[in-house]
Length: 145
Image: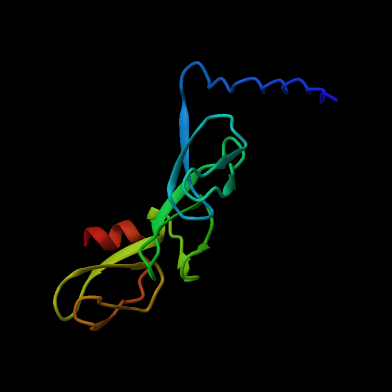
């Protein structure tokens, strides 16, 4: 007896990107690759590891930093105070430009950047710990002095 054939399912309508071709980017939640996606998408499937990453709501400003533990590029929502790396689990301080100050190393004179309000900073070049004077000046004033 012949087996009845089922009709082929109707293919889904192809996705039409916005007319202006606007794209945005985010970091894959699985493999940490940078993903490009069309504006308006709600999630992105990575072509490398197949992880699905949720897209932040429209209007959410994103920022980037490099992990201090493994040097992986991390993306986070602007305004966060700390970001945990999904690769090495290091908790990184997320500082805005106006929250950092500069001082020259007391030993090798290398320009050092540190969190505004810190009492000292250790040089990554010579490991010297430079005391930072407590001052009422703003970070910009410290940099220009």
